[in-house]
Length: 262
Ligand SMILES: [Fe+2]
Picture 1 (tube, helix red, strand yellow):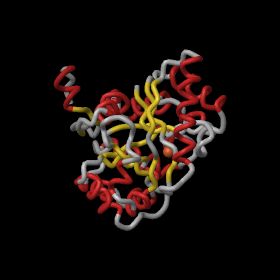
Picture 2 (tube, protein in one colour):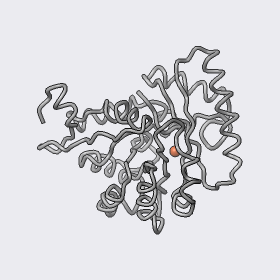
Picture 3 (cartoon, protein in one colour):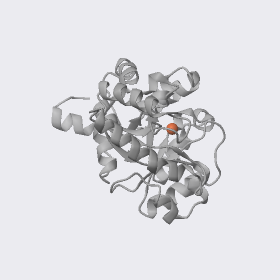
């Protein structure tokens, strides 16, 4: 599995405070089947010291993972605030894309309020060669009240990343309802953990996937945590996760290659 959203870098943001915290998270992630992690510290200012700290921290953590023989590959990205996505130049946003060839920029959807011109910013990013990835829109109060808002963002060119942490104890029933509503509608293309050290349940996909399997047994979860994350990192188009007749979701890929009927 590939985690495209993690605050595992030590001493950079509110995720991991120390190298020991990061190693504890990495060991748990490895035991939970994760083999690649995109490190996405919060970034809300283009001149933030986070930019410099992240590079040093990445080098340090990579070295320790190798020393400890923890087989996880790390990539650098950032979780860019929605305001930055609206106000930054395209060239600047491109410099915060996930390391590799994909040009994917993770955009943090706030929990409260809706940034004016965000849909316009999504369209501008997409039409200029970037892939805007909306992080945890299921937590946003406007999307919880107006589900069509997420459909409009997707129409403007966004891909949607739900997070494992959203099913934890910190985000309430509205978030869980929105998570399953948009998953059932086939609007969520991939999942990240949003791992923070202070949220132990967010270090792996294990708990989330077991809840998803119970609620939506036909869900092709491998596409959410492996297939589509890999395609995103390779700059390929994500595969759609379609809704089946009974409201569960299943991808055309699974039907075609595994012979599973919806
Ligand atoms: Fe995050």
